[in-house]
Length: 236
Ligand code: ADP
Ligand code: ADP
Picture 1 (tube, rainbow, N blue to C red):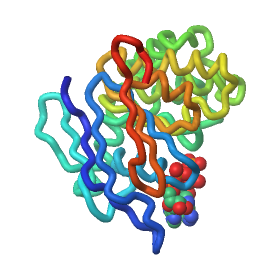
Picture 2: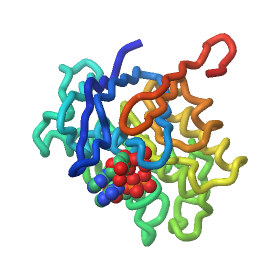
Picture 3: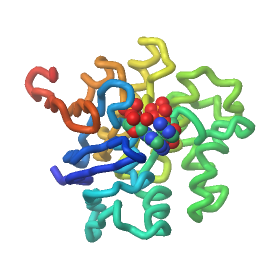
């Protein structure tokens, strides 16, 4: 299938620290890519660079939208980059995206209204996605009243409701016990690759990575290993 995002020669310095050192990676539509590696190996920096949040010092990130011309995310003007981040890209990050004072439904509907949907349309879409993620009946709960797994499902609904073609997830199961982690991964995969979107996630958990089509393992800002899942065995 079609390549959605392709990074070539990604390099990023923070002062004298080379956080990324010539990383090449691609992800296709309908494919899940896991990024692993020890702390400080460049995982977050890679995720943020692929998403057009962190600007690399060298290299390119080519994004190919459905039916549109390809763009170099790394070279886009800020305005265009933020437009991509509000439309084609969805984010499941542990902190900062969900507003604790708002309900589950409001958290999912808000970004849709920001990009122009009416309150009524945004609310209908939010309810639909919360239902798909098994949260029917909990739409009116504030985030603080939800468990960790439920809050992660709201975050997934929020990332999908705008119809994103690439979802970026930073440790989506990091704070969850293993049963809840499996459940959240099932829902994350189903709501992204299950509808033909790409998923890029950072994880420390080999069991989470094993559910992805491909695992990239970083060390000192370089790709140390890459594992592909064998389609016949389902194992990497
Ligand atoms: P990981 O996600 O694998 O833990 P990071 O991408 O966060 O790794 O960091 C890679 C390296 O770059 C580390 O040495 C980290 O300290 C450094 N780094 C990351 N972000 C910044 C920043 N904003 N300022 C300075 N150094 C940073
Ligand atoms: P995570 O736990 O998600 O890997 P990090 O600790 O890597 O988060 O980074 C959290 C934030 O701090 C990011 O915005 C990152 O760019 C920044 N950061 C990471 N390392 C450093 C550093 N050494 N100096 C300054 N900022 C950093």
